Length: 354
Ligand code: AMP
Ligand code: MG
Image (cartoon, rainbow, N blue to C red):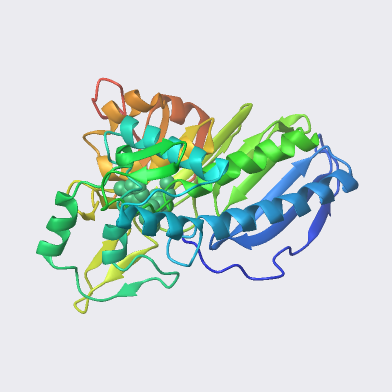
C-alpha cells in the first residue's frame, strides 16, 4: 500500500443504481485515500443511511491515512522516532490494536510478514508515492547491517507507559497490513450504523459482507499483468487481498527491476511469486498473509497456509502461471485460457488438465 497525501475534497459522487433482476438498489461512493480509490457499495439501505455511512467512512479513512503514514509526519512517525531514541510513547487504542495484530501476523508468518523493517523499505527508496523509483540497488553491507539488527514487532512492549521498543532498529511500516485493518474498521462502522450488505474496496483489495439482494456479491481478482485474473462470489463475510511484486519497484540504470516486497531475512525483494491472492474473513489477516505468501515463494506456501489457517490461496509466478488451492478453484472463475496448477496440501502440484 502506498500512502499518498490526502486530496480534498475526495468524496466524488453517490450513484444510485436502479434495482431489478434480484438486484436491490446499490449505493456507491468513491474517495481517494491510502494512495488509491476506495469504493464503497451498499445494498438494501435507504439513501439517507447510505449517505450517512459514506460521510462517516470518508472521515474514518482520512484519519487512518494521517495517523499511519510511514514517512510524512504522523502518529506513526512519532512512534518510530521514540523507538529509535529508546523512549516510551503513548498510543491510541487503534494504533495499539494495529501493532498487536502486526505482532500476531509476524509470528504466524514466521517473520515473512514483518512491518518492523521500515528502515529497509526506506533504504530501497520505497517511502514514496512516485513509482517506479529510479536509482542504484542499496549497498550489500548496508542491507546486511540492517538485517543483522533483527528488527521485529516482538521487540515492542505495550504497557501502561505506552509503547516501547527494546530494539532501536524497529521502524514500523504498515504498508502491508493497514489497508486490511482499515477495511475491517470500515465494515465494523457500517454494521454499527445498521448497514447489512456492503463492499469496501480499496483498489481491488476488499472486505465484503451480506449479499446484493438475492444473489451473492461477485468481485474481481486483480491480474498482476493488468486486467483481472478472475472473479469470485463472496460467502458471508470475507476479505480478498492481492499482493504483487509488479506495480511498485525500483529500476536501475541498466533497467533491472527490484520490487517493493522485501524478504526480511535477506533485506532484498522477493522474486519467485509475482502475486498472491488470499481469502480470509478478516482484512488485516488477508492483507498481511498476501504479503507473506509473496515472500514465502512457491515451495513454502503450504506451511504458511497451515500456520495462518488459510485455505483459499491463489499464486502467480514470474511467467504468469496461476496456482490455486482446491478450495480457491472451487470458488473462483478464472478468465485466462491457461489452466491453473492445483496447490494440494500434499505439496504435489498437478496440472488441472491431467
Ligand atoms: P502489500 O501490497 O500489502 O503486499 O504491501 C506491500 C508494502 O508493505 C510495501 O510497499 C512495504 O511498505 C511493506 N512491506 C514490504 N515488504 C514487507 C514485509 N516483508 N513485511 C511487511 N511489510 C512489508
Ligand atoms: Mg499486504
